[in-house]
Length: 168
Image (cartoon, rainbow, N blue to C red):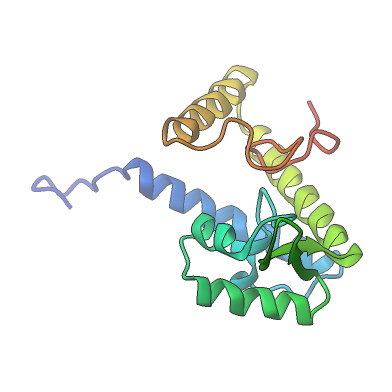
């Protein structure tokens, strides 16, 4: 509280967190309802956009801001659950690459559909101009931090929704 007893308005990081707290549980619920009730929040650093396909564990650890040991623990769990396989990197047999199984691809589709539904629910609360401005501003902020222009996967978009799922 300020000296005048007025609440301090939330700063941008708090607003991002609050919106995340409103939307994330719904995405998890939709993924579980789609038949993936064994997916836990601890798995998300690996399976979230842009996904793990073809990545080395060290790349996933860096992307998730996790230790290599922690990411390997998550990878072993996802492999045990049948979502991924770890195979030798053809360019370096000492390294491994993560590959989605058929079940992993179905999970990815369910996640993208849940994200698309969540995005539409947010956009429904905005005017067309606000939608364009919000997406453009968030994308500009993301790219200003040195993030790759189009993510690390072909056809991926910053919204987390592949082009074939995104709706106007």
